[in-house]
Length: 208
Image (cartoon, rainbow, N blue to C red):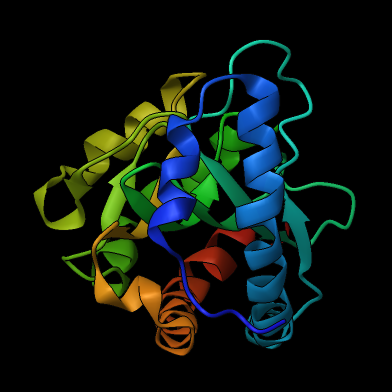
């Protein structure tokens, strides 16, 4: 299966009541598309990163009552998991698709990544386009643009606050035509990864 794009029904998945019912829709509607995206991007990202990148599709296995408000897939150099490592995410809320390079709170050495970014603040400012998006919490929607943030303030929060995260990339509103065109979306994700790979490699250093 090649990726043909996202549909209105994919976004409406997050309006389905009930954990079992919503998860059934996620498995039927969205996860096959994640697999198709992964099949098209894993080798590309492996080549760009310079090491194997493995596909992980969120299972939401810890949920017992509340259905997920978003779902995602990730690419990580670790075959067993992604949350404790820098990783690339592609996922959906009910109103958008996100494409992130993600450093989340579960990183065991989160402060080391934060210090690296602080030491190379000017490099980050040069690499990341002004129209990119930023999030400090992957569990909440974010509407912050790179152009509008105070970078050092964000990075210091990432360093000092245990729950603070650092995600950078692009988001696409539900009605964006690119989401309905599988080939165009894949090419756009490749362009985003091309932009963010230097940030990823900078952060990784000898930590991998």
